[in-house]
Amino acid sequence: MLEVSNLTKCYNGRPVLEDVCCCVSPGQSMVVAGPNGCGKSTFLRLVAGLARPTAGEIRWELDGQVLAKGEVADHLGFVSPELGLYDHLTAREHLSFFADLWGLEQSRVDELLNFVQLAQYETLVGQYSSGMRQRVKLACALVHNPEILILDEPCSNLDQEGIVLVDRIIQQQLARGLVLLATNDAGEVARYKEVLLSLDEKAAGTD
Amino acid sequence: MRRLLALIKKDLTDEFRTRYAINSLLLFAVIALVMVSFATGMAGLSASLHAALLWIILFFSAMSGMGRSFAKEQEKNTAPALRLAAPPEIIFWGKLCFNTILMLALAVLVLLMYIFLLNPSIGNLPLLVLLVLLGSVCLAGASTILAAIVSMAANQGTLLPILSLPVLLPFFLVVINATQTAFQGAGFSQAAGSLLFLVSYAVVIITVSLLLFRHVWQD
Amino acid sequence: MLWKIMLGIYILIVTVAAFVYAPGAAGLGDLSRIIYFHVPLAWVGVLAYLVSMLNSIRYLKKPDRDFDFRAVFNAEVGLVFTILATVTGAIFARHTWGVYWNWDPRQTSIFILMLIYAAYFVLRSSISEEENRARLSAVYCIFAFISVPLLVFIIPRLYTTLHPDPIISSSGLEMNGQMLQVFFAALLGFTGIYAWIYSLQIRLYKISQRWEGQ
Image (cartoon, rainbow over all chains, first blue to last red; front, side):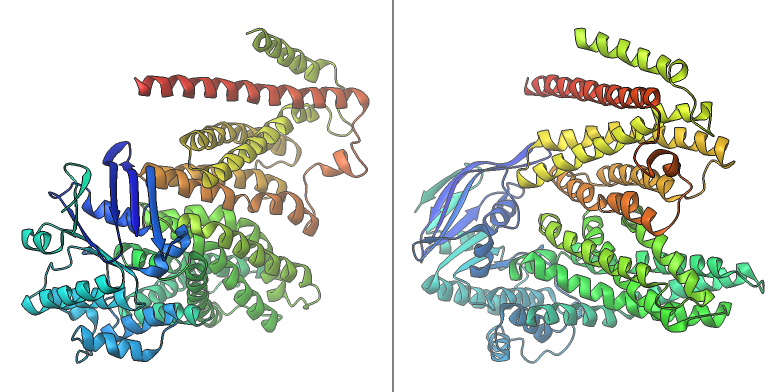
């Protein structure tokens, strides 16, 4: 469960986010919508703990326990178009790397590769198409079975099959925890907007 | 421990597959050596000069190599995923080990080529080798956190030497002096004080880096 | 206001005393008078760095712009005093040992302090984002401090130095009574100057904060 109160973020004195509030319960999906540059990615990064807010509070709760700052990352998967990949590793090596970091077995790597349909590719990620790279990012975010999934424009660069994959991931995730989604696409907004955070209005509404 | 090995393995794999990067590092060291050898001609150099030249070349080789692993994470923006997947201390150890391995490899190469090109008279070879290896650990230890800082700033090429030199000066004072005595044939017992200093320096610098690293490794 | 004037008069008295009241040291003669300026300058240079470092630590614990500002201006003050200390030291070196510079460990340690300050400012100018700039320069300020005690205390133990330690401290301070008086008076006076500059800077900062608020 996520609770955000009066979240403010300034860069060099200029406010990018001001007094944003919202609340998301387990099993819910929240869409962060708004025009380009309104701070969607910044919001997601703050909530994921990748940046520090200038003011305001972010509270994550899991099974009734409040998560400390250092613990949040253990339960979180993050996908973003800005996120990079190691161009000189294969998809398998990427997943193995993250699996090792999380202390998981190699079988998990095979499972995920099959799930995102990349098992047959042995080439380096640098040679992948953008759609394939997006799948690698999705797989890496899911390695440790996180309860929280944060997706920044997940369907960018994906073909029809890919979009179906993302939908499946989101549905599976909702059974396990919650999903935060940032997108410009009206279709996605319509599909997942159980909770809607519209950043030009800076208030959260539930539909 | 497994996480540490995973990090090191990933960095080494990535580094070796970008063959141009390794090549440029090695070539830089070679060019520095050739320059020195060419400039000094066939003149016999004193032990103190050899010590000085050797460590100048090692310093600049370190400066061109130590910044790489952090610079790449920042450039390619793979850092956020890393931040989420492992605590900062583990990341630091991973980068430190990678930098140390890189530096040791560079140092061995530089030392071999130095002996080959400049033909110094070496009194105590084992001591010399020990000093170069220990010195490499110190160089990597001091520059790792600084490389992390530099990766988040502009002017990265020139900034790392600027930040590193004040921190490394005490180390250089001791190691150059000790290397000179090694060329002159001093025994291990004579160099004991310097060796002890180098070990303590490495311990202190790495400990403080560990304490401060998480403040650097945020956005 | 009053204590500023008193400080000014005090420094004047000390300066005159340095040339007139205190006798020349054995062997060095009038040259030793530089001690009343050189050492306090170096001392304030180090003191300013310590204060800067403390504020850097405070900043890392709680990211308040105030601490960052204090760290920076102390570094500025420290840099100026350190440059003056280096210059006075070099003048002394020229007249006693014949060269302006010879990498004596004590000379080196003040030089390193200057390098650290300079590197600190170069680092700050290389980071455009305010928060990152404050945080990363705070880390560097703390980290770079490691060199200072190493150079000041440990290395001179390992190697002999030309620095006039024997005259001053082989068995405690061997300056005679008058010299000691002027010496400590100078130390106090320069610390007073530092405190005065510090208070001026704080007032300037508070005014600029209020200005920005408007």
